[in-house]
Length: 91
Length: 90
Image (cartoon, rainbow over all chains, first blue to last red; front, side):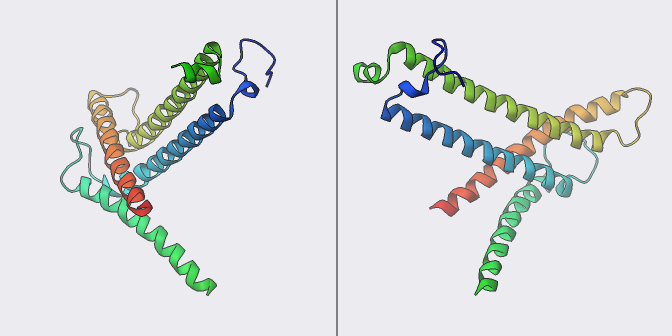
């Protein structure tokens, strides 16, 4: 990256506070992106499990919505069960 | 406002703002692209099991409804997932 060019935003000129602010900003954005990518993954997986009948409207029906919510909850439960069991195995 | 502009020149300050806006915008574009990919995959799967010589009006209706439904499913999952990870943090 060319930091000497005047039209560019020059990171080396930043004060300590600005550096901190930018670091915080980048880490927040990265966390948001990570959460959103997990939501994409979960929606895809749970959709395949819960939306099994023909599409007949643009809304989730009364069984699909709770199925999607349970799917997310149970996925996280499973994840924690795996971690917990792993800990036990390690003694 | 003075202490704000002191640490960084006004020019540099506005560049910082522009840089942050650019990052946010790129994230939003990436986010929309990922959603469109998933909608296309899942709704094609659901609505076009046997591709014919053109999209029928029934298939088009299905695609439109499927898209709305998928986005509403995305919102349900997002709300639930964030609720769970926040509960774990506390």
